[in-house]
Image (tube, rainbow, N blue to C red; front, side, top):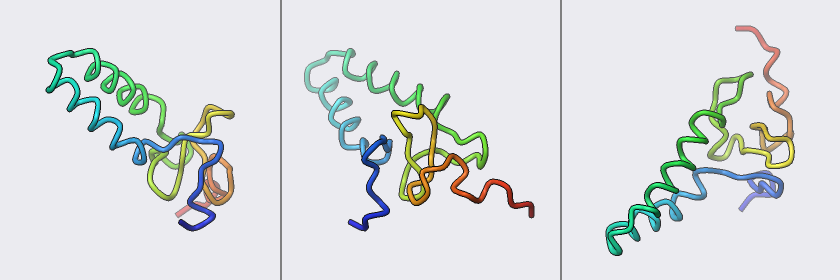
Length: 90
């Protein structure tokens, strides 16, 4: 893993996909909808809150993550909400 891909102060929904897969599978195996419901709540929260107001990108993948201390999406390479690119006009 490249050093700039590490998100020590954040969360990355893409990296949690195996957890969500497990929760949905547990619902199937145990017939307990609690697992599915909690996964859905987490994903729904992210869809409502995890999008950068500056760039419109979601805080996932290798470009951004959700900073759990700042409570906002930030770029992994700069730690800034706009990655230093939000002021450019095209």
